[in-house]
Length: 155
Image (cartoon, rainbow, N blue to C red; front, side):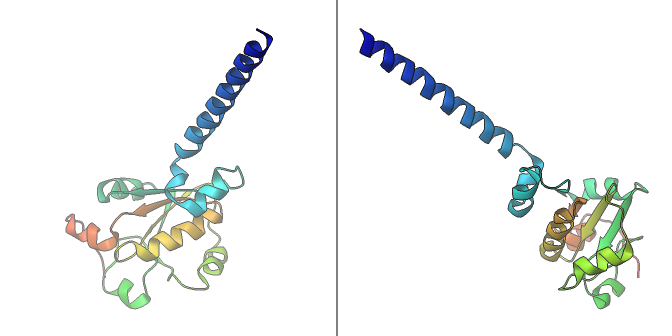
């Protein structure tokens, strides 16, 4: 009888441990930052304040209407000149991207909206911005999706 009580106590303890571990995993996986693994490792561990949200053309348009959002086009100056979203600053994605961001002195309490041609460069730039502590909104599909959605660009 004593052995049976020990076995039942052990099983109950193991069940509790598994339940706690499963709950922690759910909390971790449910965070928005987990869309980006690099940002997730930092943000979910409590080490960073930045976060990334990849949004549709419609949501992006809504987000950039706010005066608190800094809009950044990470394409080359030549691509930017061929047509960009009104109000966008051109900060080309590259090796010195982080230094360029630091140089212009963006405030980390506001949002940064980023886009490129199709989404590849803006995703990389967004990850760097998140690591720096910014709240980032990225345009899914880039300016190609923006124009396909019927939105205008300026030259």
